[in-house]
Image 1: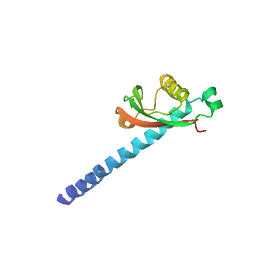
Image 2: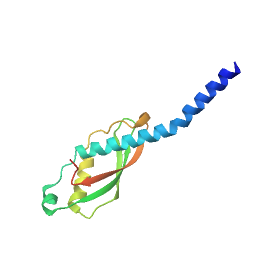
Image 3: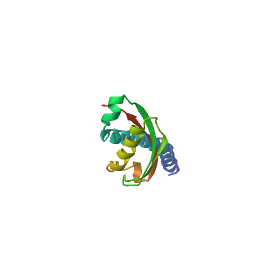
Image 4: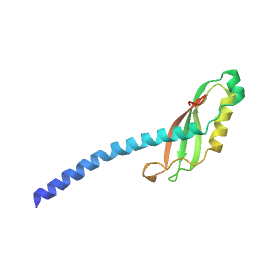
Length: 118
């Protein structure tokens, strides 16, 4: 009987050791899905397109357990006033994000690239 208990303990310890890596991987996959979600709703302003404006904005997003954005903050802005205004407009009109891993509220940094990638 002791051998079975030791075996179960080893299996349980192995699963617990895998848990942080799995959670970390799931968070990385969620971040990629969130960036794709943002990119799918981006539209390049015609005035910025004509001027040839290009930039990448780093945005920190807080999402509740259901995927609803509760807050966002621009961490690294860009030089284009047109694209910064469009970044704000984008986050105001974004629909719900996919639910985060394990349905826990999360904060993540997302990169918004202008012009949007196809």
